Length: 231
Image 1 (cartoon, rainbow, N blue to C red):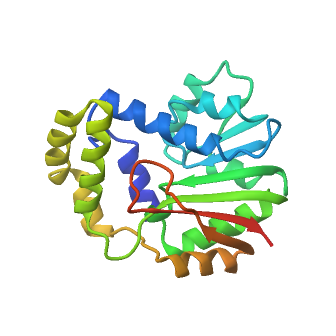
Image 2: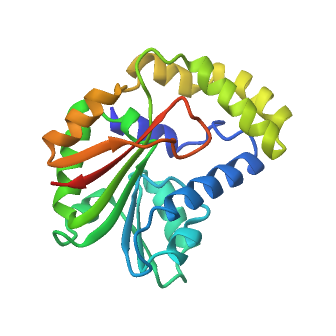
């Protein structure tokens, strides 16, 4: 499942309806994750970071920032974009797996869980448990609940677009997405969904004590964010 989605994200697509959409999306994610960084010297991992256009904002709030991206083209773009930034390191997933145990203070997994099978997510949470310090924090955000229709995402995007100056682009982009490879792939593979209890159980099985946050990170409040700490 993850390999098919990585190939999609590494190809040209229309998920971001305009440069304005992409910019405000990544700016919002960076700001809200940065607010969770526990200390200025914290070592932070953004796993499945995508293009991370505003990772410098995260790095400014941390001591060291690791960006992990499984899509090779995106990862190369990240490495080029932040080549001169002393705090930012771009890693492949296998390089993350080789990081020292208990070496990270915060791990963010934003809008990734839906593209993993339950087995893949469980293995990743077990890795995160090994990498986090005893007092570290795992943030799993943009989790999709069962029975939430795709139309809910469209409504949330229209509201976000209206507030940020790309409403017309969003309307055109939604129509384009309905006919895109994204919808064909989503129809074929589906998305992995969790209700609150199932996500908390999955985290507990990996050794975490978790709770659902009051708000989801990002613009779509029909989705969920979970904050978890190693037990």
